[in-house]
Length: 90
Image (cartoon, rainbow, N blue to C red; front, side, top):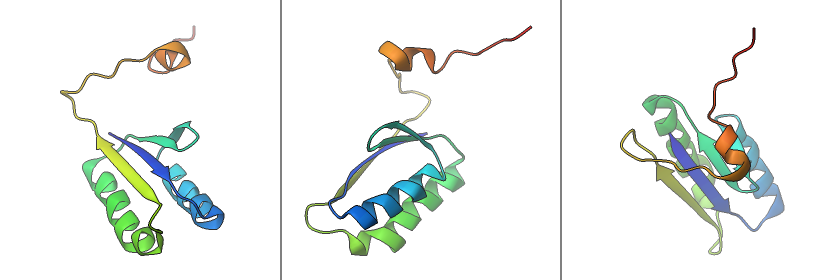
């Protein structure tokens, strides 16, 4: 799993980047995404960012990726606290 956050100034590039990331993960907040997938998919996301987007970023743009491993502990509060619970229907 990884957490990805970005700050991209140019509207068109930001929209394109957001749609790209949404195809692999889900939005947690405005520019913060969670991507849960296989290592291969996570590697593809990173390569796509490097090859497709990085050269188009301006000096003020940034993308941060936090890799979350099984050893990391995620604490959730508020609404986020309910997102990891299983729903059982009878």
